[in-house]
Length: 344
Ligand code: SF4
Image 1 (cartoon, rainbow, N blue to C red):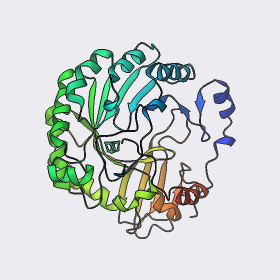
Image 2 (tube, protein in one colour):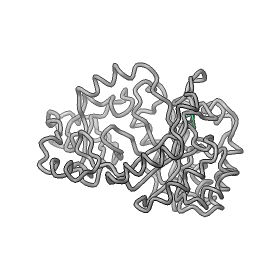
Image 3 (cartoon, rainbow, N blue to C red):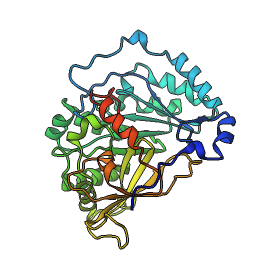
Image 4 (tube, rainbow, N blue to C red):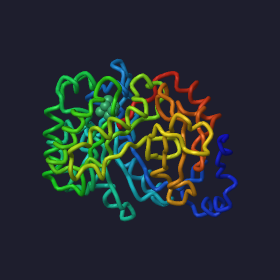
């Protein structure tokens, strides 16, 4: 079976109606109600998949002030945004971040105000952030082993991060979630990952997203092949109770977040090209209005493949219209230089 034609939202009859509603709509026809704001490009770590040692930071005068950010958020809110996430770099490096949180929490339409952080500075800021109105925190942490932390982040900081997690949990946020990036040859160890999840759960956090692969082509060298990632996921769940129902392999993709539903060595009868088994992706998160949500994409099993775009020539069935081959080709060229650093 050849790949199905690319899903073209411009032929979606509902799109004109959606656009005229004043909401933020992208070229795929998705309505966006989430806004992610990078409050600084600086970071106190140098994760190997994110930030080179010699990165050039912006002059702090070039950053928007808290008043300017708030004014922008109000405009976004008037276009349908009701979820705001503060990120970086490392957002807690921005002085008095709780002041910004206070400004944003006064905007009634915002239903969810969250923060993604590496946690190193959370110990001293957790209470102020909670009191200012922050709802949720996602902590980026890839390992509990100090030497592995240093290999990965190029700095010491595990102790500080763990103290930050404790402080966040004690401050009583709606949720503290773990965000782990699984990297080939560095932390792709199921036993270590199992311990990380167990300890996080025991401390009172939720490891809702376990793997979060990034679709950054320039960093492919770090990416775990999808079949191996699936195997690690399953192996790392063994013997864990109260965790496994939340753990899943998720992949950030340009059409939204997708979930790997299965990897199998068995062919699917009648599906040409699936003789050696397949990977089945399901769209987990796209706009509520997108017709794609929950649809399935079946990809030919390819032991050499890296991440999602690596399967572009092997799509067997694309109900969701995930693949835009022209974009994939373009991305391979334009991502040749390292991307702008951004926290996970
Ligand atoms: S992934 Fe996050 S913590 Fe790591 S270097 Fe990038 S911004 Fe910093």
